[in-house]
Image 1 (cartoon, rainbow, N blue to C red):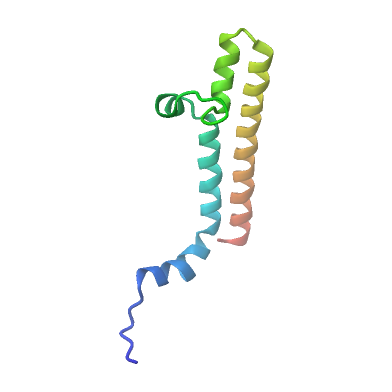
Image 2 (cartoon, helix red, strand yellow):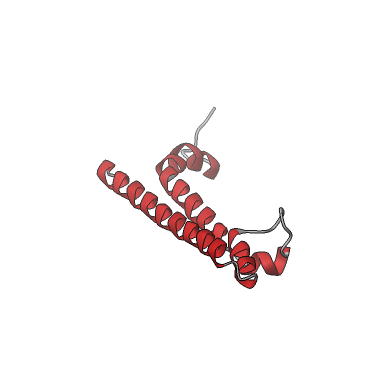
Length: 103
């Protein structure tokens, strides 16, 4: 079988590019998930506010504020802030680890 020196893009991506970018894939997934947790407008516009199906944490905060249940709204909002800081801290640790390894 004669080889031409060319490889398919899929062959170049899977064994070569994907392992080099694996930490970036993880970071992208974490940031995407974190953003989705706080998404409010898109869920309300497209999916509605269906309890148990399309309700996200930010929708709970709005519901509690509208019902003047300030304590519950504050607890959820505080949890969302802590989650955001944890996400940022985790990404900073990943970046530091990558910098030490030189990848």
